Length: 141
Image 1 (spheres, rainbow, N blue to C red):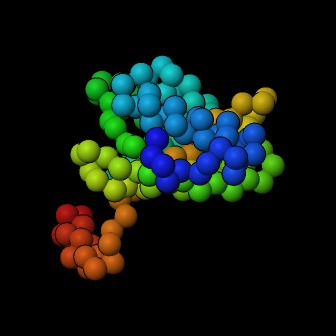
Image 2: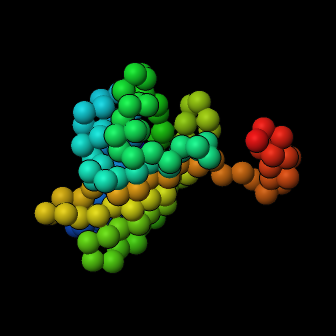
């Protein structure tokens, strides 16, 4: 884990548990440990990927992921906000394949356990190249 992450002393117990879930998510995806990876999601959890068509239920995402050898995203920084049994977060990640990416989502505590209700992976686009990138996206639609 990078040194830019929130220090454990800045997190309350719930937030630390939620951070552990997200850290495990990245660890399990990097080793294609799909049983443990998908155990971190709520039964009705969803994954929103980088392609506009990627809005998957847990079962749909599992069907996509299981044949793969995994993917690696290393944590650079993370912010969390908590309201009761709900935590939402945004994190900056680094990928050997894609460079900088962003994960955002929500965790819900049910029966004392934090689970991912929604995870959204995106690629932040620097403003200086946004027009050229969005032109490429439009041309590809």
